[in-house]
Image (cartoon, rainbow over all chains, first blue to last red; front, side, top):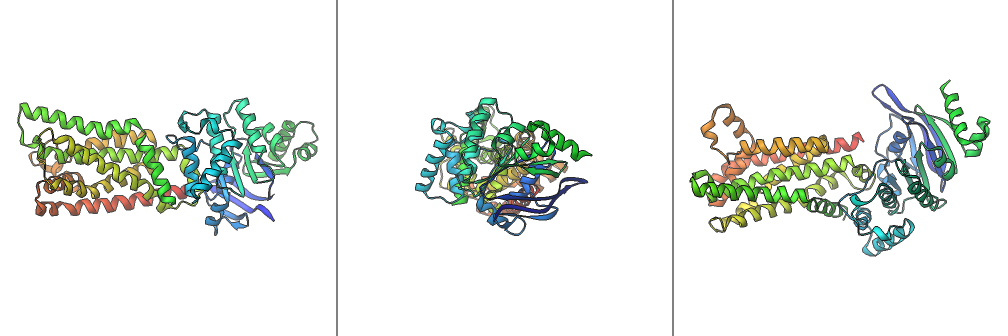
Length: 242
Length: 243
């Protein structure tokens, strides 16, 4: 059974087609990256799959639930870390995690257990009492992903998780994302080639709202007939332009 | 559970912002102090402490509008709401979650205003309890107006519109600072068509125990509260769908 399946998923804004007839299947436990330049339609795709935006046409199934008719069921099984920092600034790191636990109706015991588990996994122990607003961009992103994971989602959406981070913070976050592999289905959007190549089981390349190619990094390189992934990406995107 | 969790978070966000506390509590108290000092030197019946305190208490609510508008606008700009829209929280949870924690904050602000006025000469009477409770419909109006602005505007715009324009408008049109009948004309008509002057007169009447006069002013306040709440709900849910 697929974690995600889209059938002709389309989003049109006033005269612009942001996502154009997307057909995609993502297996359970897979780490799938949507790669593309700015405006490719990655974030719009994630917004539709997470119920933030209604499709103009087509349908998608997330965990087997339709995003149009079963949005409430979809919300119960997903975790989302949006592109921008999405934390409560005047709350401490611990209070931010407690906020999400409370929203999902966790008991006090389960809340403490989940905070302990996520703090250990994302190295948040040392900053649990610090206000989120006082954290650096890298730590805020870690907190943001921990908040998305604390509800034990079957499917996790990470929209440009390392955007604007320095190289050290980016690699630290990659380690955290790698640790999720196999346990949670992860859909990651990025425009960093090396990020997609380093983390993903499979990569989908998008341009102008269309999915140009899907495969492992090696498959995409072979398809483009080049040795490095960046050249493969450029070749596939250029090919898609013609 | 969901609603209470979100409410607690909103209360913490407001109470931990020092600017909120300075303006929300400090400014009305400074005004009470200054106008009492003026009254001591140049007596004006409008600025007698028993008349002034209910008016300043209502004026203080304009900062409640600023609190709720800033909170909602900040949440939108920080993408926190985007995250929360993908959780099981409903539109109803969001609206009540913002409103519920601000009501006790506003009531606390009113209590502090009355307590602060006692050493300045305020007559201590049981009616102050009615005056504090009676302010609730206007509190709802101010919070709803804030949520409406916060749903439509950015943080900077909220600062300008709710922080400067609305506080000034509510002050001029409330009859706290000058007698509206002396101005009369279109200004007086506009002031009477809005809820601010009615809220001040309602509060004054409750404090003085003139419940008959209070009854004459409650209807416009309730009508504006209902309209503002409905508009806030519609705009907020509209914003949710726009995402």
